[in-house]
Length: 115
Image 1 (cartoon, rainbow, N blue to C red):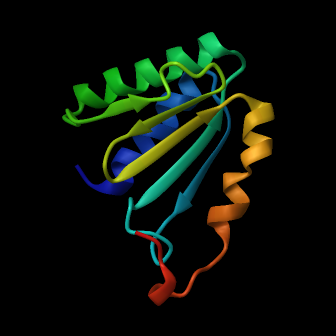
Image 2 (cartoon, rainbow, N blue to C red):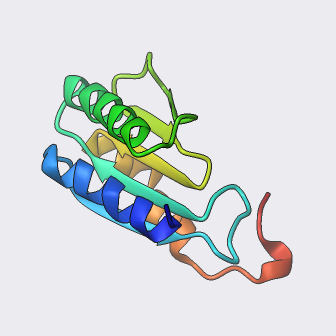
């Protein structure tokens, strides 16, 4: 499956499960950690946990077996790592505090791209 198809699937899964403010950031020329970062918000700690678990379950159904969740003990942030796409799911206040959209949306010269 192509990376853009996987990204669209992730965005649809998040949207179908009531995640809000879903934003995708292309990490090309910014970092070598992944191709895309997707950031979304949930409404409660329970919603964040459910979104992350549903996402991993649905991604495994399309063949992405090595997905895992980080931040299981956190009540306001979850990360789903698919290797090529990193998904952050935040409680809105924490999302505003960390402001990853601003940090990762700026263009970075290729020679300064982060590992």
